Structure formats: C-alpha cells, structure tokens
Length: 95
Image 1 (cartoon, rainbow, N blue to C red):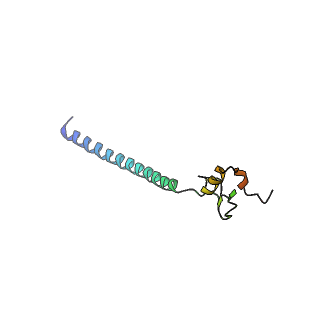
Image 2 (image 1 turned 60 degrees about the vertical axis):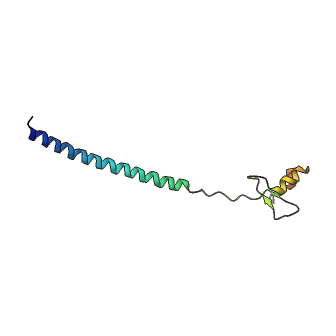
C-alpha cells in the first residue's frame, strides 16, 4: 500500500475516533450529571412526622419525652428510685 493511501486511511481513522470519543465523553458527562443531582437529593434529610410525647415528668409537666433517643435525666433518676416507666406515661385522650 502506498504511503499516501496509508496517510489517508490514518486521517479517516483519526476523524472517526474523534467523533466516537466526543460521543462517549458526552454520554459520560450526562451520566455524571445525573449521579451528582441524585446524590444532592439523597443527602437532603427526609421529612419525619411529628412525634407526640408519651411520657411526662410529674414534678415539671413541661418536661416530656417521646420515647425516642436517650432517656432524659429526670426519667432516669425516677427509674433508679424504683418507679416504673408506665407511671410517667401520658394518658391518651382517645382511650
């Protein structure tokens, strides 16, 4: 094969590869953009429903606890003194 034909073949292959590389790069950038927007939405905290309190401190009625997380100090102290957790339960209005 003469050198001129080889050079023309080289130019055609180079042009074809450049087109394919641009297309693949665009597809990868679109995929990356989708992943970034998905991760931004995923990192936002989802809204949780309001949890009503289930326990109340009889000595200080403004102190309540919903039963989630660490027990408050007032409840821990009362439980150590021998009281039961049901002694502090808030009676539901529907019952």
